[in-house]
Amino acid sequence: MAKKTSVLATGGAGFIGSHVVVELVDAGYDVVIIDNFENAATDVLQRIARITGTEVPTYAADVRDRELVRHVLGRHGIDVVIHLAGKKAVGESVAEPLMYYDANIGGGIALLEAMGAEGVGKLVFSSSATVYGPGDAPMDESHPVGPSNPYGRTKLMLEEVINDAVLAGKISVALSLRYFNPVGAHRSGLIGENPRAVPNNLFPFVAQTAAGWHDRVRVFGDDYGTPDGTGVRDYIHVVDLARGHVAGVAHLLSGRMQRGHERLNLGTGRGHSVKEVLAEFSRQCGFEVPHEIVARRPGDVAACVANPQRAEHLLGWRAERSFEEMCADHWAFQRAVLRQEAEPAA
Ligand code: WQD
Image 1: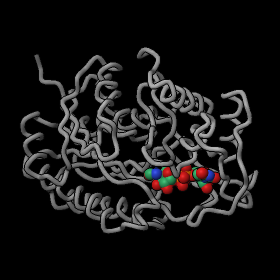
Image 2: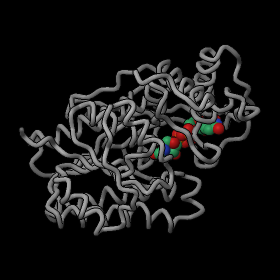
Image 3: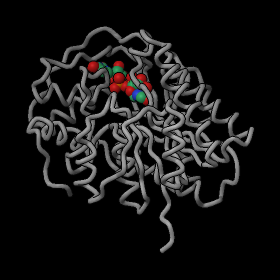
């Protein structure tokens, strides 16, 4: 029987990573995980197995361990690497920039060296819309970059490192996927965003407030130049985002891209405001989610929405799940966390 294509997912036990692993397994790939479990619960592996019926080989390790990464690449005959491991809290990155440069840039360089040493040439990198400078209209990949925090700068810098690694022939092809705002959860309620600390992001905070974990949502300003004055973002369902990675892997395997590095926006192309998020969660949970207008959060922009046409054209991928589904699935996962159990896998 022909060998199945093998994919290594670094950070595969995290919020995005676990959804990417589920979609890869469902698409017929052999998958291996490397995760240091700094920001992931170990029971996520059992939850992935319940959803997919597959035990995914997992190494509890850090991508900076070059020898371990080389061992995994060789032992499993990895064909493509999806690099999701990294630190992603904007506020923390401002307070601890060196930790972010070490983890995100150091980790990326170690991975690229291991890939070069083992002759693994195909990479999908988890980048972010925070590489862009401000802009109220939908952004395509030519929008000027201008990250406003160390986290965003690590993403942009690693894109450049990857670009130079491709130009030097250390790896052959790479896609940097620039995520807009990933939200929602797998329909089973088994995997989703369950941050250990109080979340900074809107969706998990609204869901936790609806669940009674906080007394109210603080709306960071209602005086932006947006239709209702509150911040507008391009929320994308995490399952759509995960399927964008599967489409990216298929694109790299297709041979359509012999050499080079593409940056692609993964978003829906539609924006929703804070007030719209609150209204939809209130509708879903059957009561008004308590909230209060407070001062703007430093560093926030009015709007950040994708023009996703390049990803749609190159990958034949587009986000399919509605804003309502994002809120429903996020709320269902929050309830499942509350019950400490989840509905049987779909
Ligand atoms: C969304 C909107 C806030 C919380 C961040 C990271 C980015 C990416 C996605 C990794 C804004 C408002 C929020 C709250 C609020 N992560 N808000 N009250 O800032 O667009 O992006 O997450 O790649 O790197 O920066 O997302 O969810 O924090 O904010 O009013 O308690 O909700 O002002 O308008 P953001 P967010």
